[in-house]
Image (tube, rainbow, N blue to C red; front, side, top):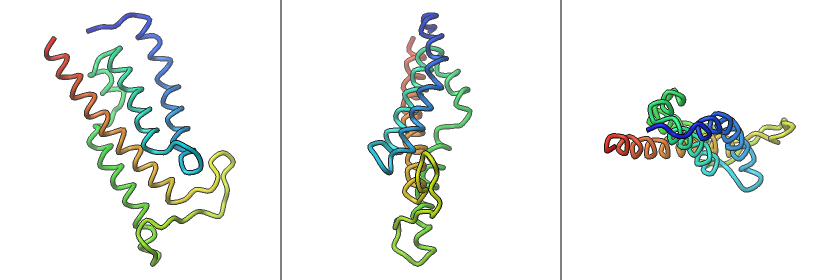
Length: 141
């Protein structure tokens, strides 16, 4: 199923903008509303839009990573943010922050690492569901 030319062209311009916005939401999440969950959903919506306009196969090729690998890496990253405190003799998931303050982000700490893990986890789960449903829809037609 091929979409309209307008939708295909708009999607090519919107995809990087939506992905940058999801990254922005991810980075501001530990200080303001946002974070890994919402950022992952916004990124998944970008790939869902691409799948609607160009097809699931092209969206999977654009992603270049299996969604299951995104889920696994997200779990590992989120778990590693909690293990950092355990290896330092503190409680699991206790937050640690660097002393250096970055211009846009602020201080980087284990909550940001946890948010990155959640971002990949939510992105992988959402894309696995979206791609599976879209592939079934293409098989029916």
